[in-house]
Amino acid sequence: NPIRVAERVAVLDLLSKGRCEFGMGESASITELEPFGRSMDNKREVFEEAVQAIIPMFKDGGSEHHGKYFDYPLRNVLPKPITKPHPPLWVACSQVDTLAKCGEWGLGALGFQFVSADAAHAWVHAYYNAFVKRQKKLADYKTNPNIALVSFFMCAKTDEEARERADGETFFQFALKFYGASSGRQRPAPGTVNMWDEYNKWKKANPEAHASALRGGLIGSPDTIRKKLKKFQASNIDQVVLLNQAGKNTHEHICESLELFGKEVMPEFQGAHPELLKWKEKVLNREIDLEEIDTTAFKERFSGNMAKIKTDGAKVQAAE
Image 1 (cartoon, rainbow, N blue to C red):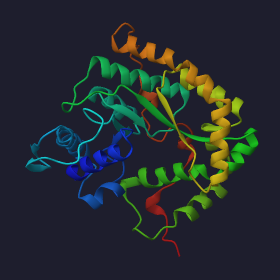
Image 2 (image 1 turned 45 degrees about the vertical axis):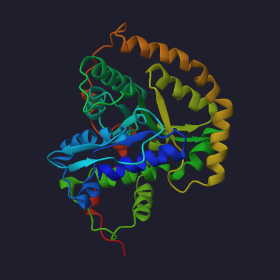
Image 3 (image 1 turned 180 degrees about the vertical axis):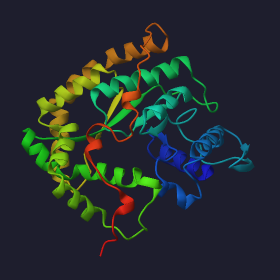
Image 4 (image 1 turned 90 degrees about the horizontal axis):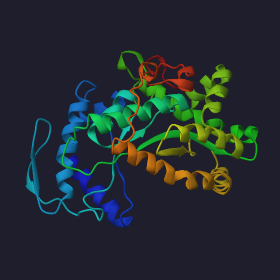
């Protein structure tokens, strides 16, 4: 419900004293859509109208919306966020076409995709070219020119120790593909599958694919992670979201990982951030014309190391 979402975002912004960032998404799985009476066929249309309905609610005074999917009379939705005109707006995306659409909408792109540095380079060009050359906002909001990509993360003194501690992180990838890549959009009945058991069966049967998936993220020693981050840095990614808490990782290992990263890796990249901002300013002012890269090779949703994870959720037998 757009009204409830607007209320919750405003409350969170108030409680956090203006540190809320508002991430939205149209969903990528029928598992998420069906309980709300939505379908894969019209989810983009519903999402776009939801954005059009929500944004005016953040402004002082009342607003109303009369559309195909939502119909609200004039009401003053309270509370209002501290951040004016509203918290920064993001859209979750797992495919390059949606990411480019984020640029067209003028919204930040939160890339829930575990891409390579080469793919990241193409994604950045697709996003900023759409933002600068083909922007068509959905409503009257403040744009947010930013692109962030998710990466698995575990930092330890050695690569071997990091991979051992991150052993369960591929569970996140397995679950995404289990629910997002089943043939015919079919799903096992709710409550009939133990995902952790299915994941461990897959891991035992596919040790090479599991090891390869672990090598793909920001998992390793400070030196290893630094080298991988420099590749993303060269692509002009604005942010890398560190997914540290997937699988059965311990709280102690997560804290140690963050502390080691913060001490030995982060300062170098923080120091280089002003250069990224200068580059972005030139791109937005069209002083730099980015190449229109063919993104065909990067259109597969489950690409890179995720392609090695083979599962069909529709065929999984009910757990005993």
